[in-house]
Every structure is written in C-alpha cells, then in structure tokens.
Length: 302
Image (cartoon, rainbow, N blue to C red; front, side):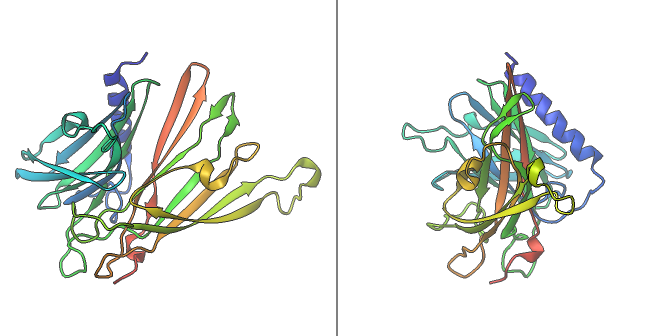
C-alpha cells in the first residue's frame, strides 16, 4: 500500500510542475494562475479513509490574515482564520480544522478563502488512503475590483467540461463512473450565508456516437447525441451516469452548465466546478481531476 504522504506529495509535485511549465502566466477569474484575494476550492472530502490538505501561499513580502469558510453539502458553515508571513506557504490538514459531526455534516463540501490583497495562490490535495490514490487541483482565484457589482471579480455563470468518458470497460480496466462537482460561492459576500437554492442550472450534454462498420459513412464518421438536463440545490455531486445513463460501452462526451440563480439583489451566482474520473485496473487505480472551464466576462449582469 502506498504511504499517505507519498501520494499526497506526488500529486502536489505534478500540479506545481504543471504551473511552472505553463506558458499562460496571466488569466481571468476561475483560473488558478493568478494570485488573488479570494480562492474557492470546490471539493474537500473528510469521509472515513479520505484526507484533504490545502496548500496556501502568500506571494507577497507582507504578512496577511486569511479567513477560511467551510461549507458542507447542505451549505452549513464553519470558519477559521490563519496568519501567513510574507513569502510563506502553509499546509493545512482540514481534519485538524473541522470535524464531521455524527449526522454526517462537513464530510464533503467546498472552501471559500479570502484575504485583504491579491497575494494568494492555492492547491488542494484529496487522498483516498484506502484505495491508494490522490488528486490535486488548483483553487479558483478571484481578484478584487473597484466599482463593480461585486467586491471581487465574479465567477462565471457558465461552465464547460471539455471531455469525459461514460462508465464501462476500457483498456483492460474498468472506467468507474465520473463525479461532477459544482459549488456556487456567495457572489458578493465571501463566506456569507447562501440562499436555499444557489444552484439552478440547465445542462447540455453531447455524446460522440461511433457507427458500426456496417453503417459507417466515410463522409460522416460519427454523430453527436445531444441531451439536456437541469439540476438544482445547495451543492452538486453528481455521478456522470445519472446524467448520461450507462451506454453499453464508454462514450466520449462534453457538457456545459449555465446557472440561472441570483441573490436577493439580482446578482448572479457564479460557479466553480471539478470533475473526477477513476480507471480501476488489476491491483491499481488511476484517478484524474479536471477543473471545469468558464469565462467570467460572459457572466450576466444584475
């Protein structure tokens, strides 16, 4: 069995390497490549056998106070505060900061992190110590803005998952059902109480259907099957099979989500999303995590 520390560090090294080699140093909100004063991590997991770490870095030379607001799947809240020295990095074991209660609250959810200046970058590592795998993903940064409807750059109301596979057998292994995770942080008050339904999404799903050799058309080698759905709630954790069904063999697809929820003043709830997919082979498992893409400039205005 892999040691807990090894799988956590290995995942973190992968993310840091990807960051260092990225040609795109500057990006818009909902991207991990810009230091911000707000970072949303859409997924933590503290169920038995799981651990979650947040790595927060202060890229400035000035000490900062950082507030962390933890939401569970029903959007109940807990908060805490830490201090980061200038040019400092801290590794936070969430099991030491929040405790799941007997009713199951705060076992899974998202984290909203804020500070007073655009100096934070962050990475989350979620480890399954039972099945010996871990994922790492970068938090969604937002910078402060002056004169806007929100104190921070808004998160996008439209998200795209550019590719996924439906469950089934592939390459000698079993492709487990993927998990779509979507959080809707408060649009104007980070860490604020959320409305009853901050997520009211419409979804478009397209699946690539490969024709059989007998009916293959060389001018049209495949077709796209279009599905639509709607999802409401505080926080979404949806197995992909509940959205697409379970085809006889894995199908390649992509999806888009649009959130139609607003706060009491009509400010749209932006979204931050993550997709997790697992391939289980003989004696091993391979897991990947993909942050959903979004363009905050396309967000609707109140």
